[in-house]
Length: 107
Image 1 (cartoon, rainbow, N blue to C red):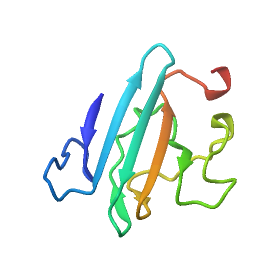
Image 2: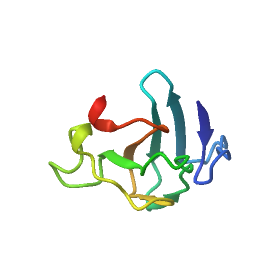
Image 3: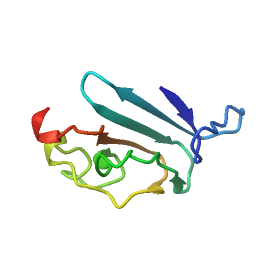
């Protein structure tokens, strides 16, 4: 896994930081996950890693959205246009992307 801030590979561990992101590769599941935590009082844009040509990022959870769009069944998660992702103030976001050769319908 890798820690990030609003930019990939640049987490802000300072005492005044209000945001962090984490990406993890689940090799067995052939899935890449990206978690965004924005505790800041304003929206922030978070850079996303390239998906290695395997497919787009999908938005599984975004607590800033109205229900029922805030948390959707992962097989129904909509594709997002890519980097950056705008995380609204005081929100949590979970994105996923299939690794090369994987298909979300097979999970």
